[in-house]
Length: 293
Image (cartoon, rainbow, N blue to C red):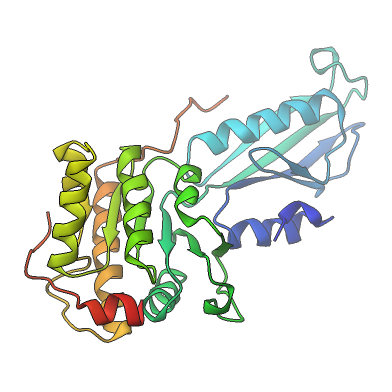
């Protein structure tokens, strides 16, 4: 869904929220004297687009820049700024406006889930209810359900491992495709980036051992290989049913991203001043990872 196909800020805002994207809503809060737009006029500003307008000219230019500076701070906030519409802004209206900036920050947690099998569908149903941005990737169109939950970006790709390069630094990568070689290719691409928060691969200890040996053979450093979590999920939440496996993985992810948030680790955010490891006994069977994932 393209948020900017909409002609109204409210529709664009709803679409951006579903996609986990940030935006700023700029509202003409008050007007004194002559001004280009009336009180209540709104404009939506994202990182690279705008919807609707507050009057054009230097006022709107400054408002867009201020909104994008707020977005870069990566947190929800509000700000009111007073603008005299005189020579400083190059506008001859002669009035005065107060603009309200309401910043709705993007989801700081980006998760890429590779695989739309039984476990993938169960895990998506959980993650879709969390404050995360979820990219759900598979090469098989028939595996995706007819209805994709709000906040989930469905990506049908003939080359799933290529999607790794599109992720932001600090992303969480979960690999559970129908194919072991594809699992390996995705995991290797994620580990080579060296900037992911998490790389988890569904599978048994046997699969984990094979993958680690192959990664070592191809020259990945030990610290990169150790970053891979396989088997995936919490050992304290056992079970092989797809929903049990999904709950275990979701619990691990929540614990990790909440811990990073408490520590203030946000590698994908750039702050600007405001203007004015795993349990080896946690085994997921080969039947679960291939037949159910």
